[in-house]
Image (cartoon, rainbow, N blue to C red; front, side):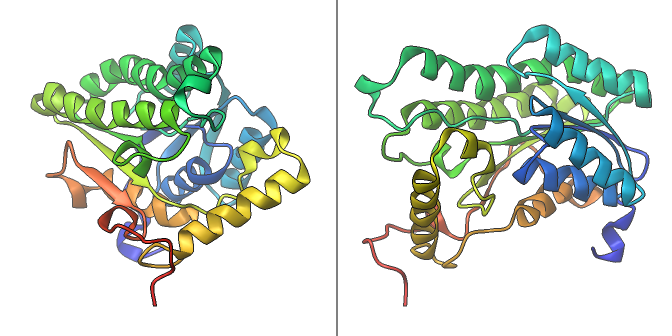
Length: 272
């Protein structure tokens, strides 16, 4: 990490949801490396505890709080855990999310649609609702919402996911308006194809389905301008910047970290 970033979040308290794997885990690690005290939240206890252990082993200050962001009391308790442990909250990263099963909208199971909206949208709302009073007490703060390129454009058989991520994008803008006068900055990141190994979906896929899904993602990523998937750390570095003094005049921004995905219409071939 660059020396100028090493202590950029010194003594800040950050809550990162969905921190057990992938982008959330990378964000938690990056912010810990930058001096923040981290509360890692996830429904996957073993993964969350392992990520917390790795931060501590590297000299960081972190605790794990198990919780489902779509449940009001569990979201409240995750925020309360940060206040009990570290005395307050400065940063909230709403990263927890779920994709739902691929289907056209008339084929989507209602319970599956409701679950995607509950985790992605309701979860972002609940965690923000309970964290913001503590940011107000600090006199300033940062929220970073992890949306998706699928919130900026349509995608095949992803109605619930596209709807949820589009909602997060506009909720980001709305929160920026309401809380800008309180010096609370709210921004969103829209990742493109990220090389997470589809870890959260592994349990629901056969080996053949997993291999096919990874192959499809790799092929799609090759057709984007930069021609590859990103590593989670490449998204984490943007989240770190958005919470740093370097982004002090940024709020309501929707930042695509997508290798150029949404800049072009692709005809189905990798660029030369």
